[in-house]
Length: 473
Ligand code: SAH
Ligand code: SF4
Ligand code: F3S
Image (cartoon, rainbow, N blue to C red; front, side, top):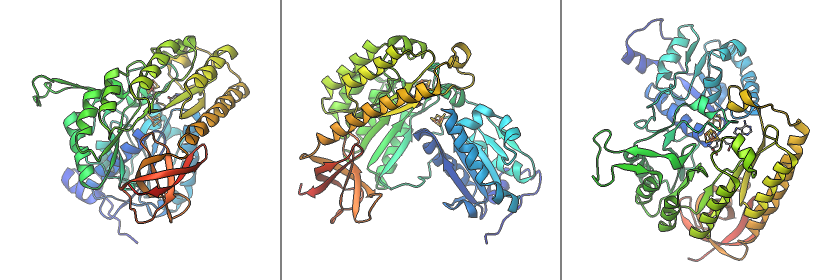
């Protein structure tokens, strides 16, 4: 058994607190939702490790359980509530166990989460993680603790993330936080606050450090990476007088130059903001992966207008044309929402026809879930019956499955360059890794190791995976 130190009430000295708070205490952290949440959990682990908390993968031996939550759809919140129930017994047996809810659901529900989920001691929004050590000590002293303040500046640029559950090869780097777009269906602007970019020099430094520790792929994360912007003059950090501001294309170039053996990915691109400059930088550097996630949401311009997406069907198709012209080998994926408020059969069919025109390599699709406070919740009726939403979703899923299979089949007989990520899920004798286009490839491991770039001849596939064998370079 680990020894526990109970912090006396009102122990004012912050340094003493920092040293004693986490001494021998174990933190169990679970993440839901998007990649940004997983990236944030690594920031949380880092902040708490400074206070002496070690992480554990076993919730039963934890002294602090934190769930980093998602609010994007109702189902995501229900998952978290079910998960909280699973900890009820442990809390009863060990009343000093701290149970906290972090992330988007914490920010959306604030104090009401404490009222609705009696088990919860701690509610912390995405911009308040630096306050976690103080908040945990408040809970230790017998109070419930809440901090859901959003910030206009916080980017955690100086926090060195603890890489959780990492394969040691691929890592996320947050390049910005928040979102200013106000798509009418989306809760993110409310849970993540205003958009702000992170200092590019700290992004490049993080990429360099990852490369030096053996990582070979970074994914640059933001809700809308194309609106990344940093003014280097702002804080006297001018490197080049002629380049006072850094946009996403320039940032990506800076990261691509860290090392030609460091692959770069990014997510998410926004159709209204994605520039040809970004596509040209992708074409210029072979270590920037030829893969773009460009969520369309709907193939009908009236629905897009109602969604407040800032583009039309034709504009989106023109952006796809630009990708296909500048990066003919690029894979393209998307997000689609079925059954948004008042969506007609014809409008839904426009989404299907757009899919058939573009033939995405991959798609994430959802049926519309009304979220509190959003523009759509206030202005439009959620009037498409669930069975219709689900049927439309099925139609989208079926088309996508056929397209994914078609794309994978085109690799058969071709040699692909793969970055090895680690053992495949099904067998230790096999490794898996991705090609530049983000397709997952499984093959017998031979003499190779994770982090190697190897050539694989593709021999077989399903809609989700490619299978092949290593060939000599
Ligand atoms: N920033 C990204 C998306 C982040 S949310 C972008 O702009 O594309 C990820 C996806 O969840 C969205 O692309 C959308 O397809 C889906 N989504 C968001 N809100 C939703 C809602 N209320 N109901 C169903 N799906 C939703
Ligand atoms: Fe949500 Fe739109 Fe922002 Fe994406 S761009 S996070 S969908 S508001
Ligand atoms: Fe979910 Fe928040 Fe991401 S709502 S999708 S975890 S930004």
